Length: 179
Image (cartoon, rainbow, N blue to C red; front, top):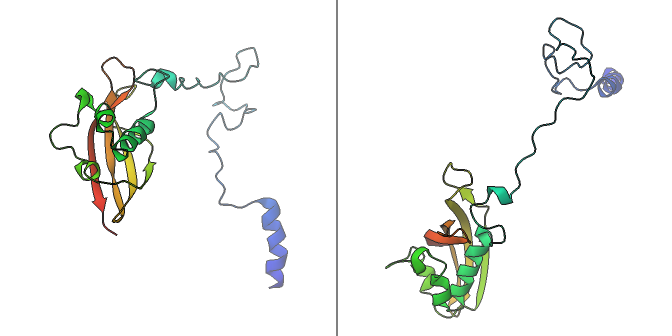
């Protein structure tokens, strides 16, 4: 026990051996290295060039800079459905309607919304183009009606409108969740 007490301060002062240290052969690890593998001096002692700054978020958007983001479009759509304003809700879809049998029909068919809670996740890019032109927004919805509280989860897929003014709903997959 006495040895452990004496060794503990030494370990703390010396540092833990589990820390990651840069490899010794990496020339950038030791700036003052004079070995054969060190980078040649260029005459001026300037710092390394900084990494390029990431492009602005507005430049990476497939829609206008002042357009609502993807989760906001989903929020306004579900809120319009809850308020019974199906014409405003349908205007959020590609072509102005969700089609014959929308994949969120169970949500749209609920009567008498009394409470609504929408939780959206971060949009997920579904294509490799930059900026992404097809995004999926995960969603969890809790609806209170006269008969009780219902939970739904799934996703809404969005794409830019033809004119690039905002996002529109391209598809959905919303299912009831059993407790």
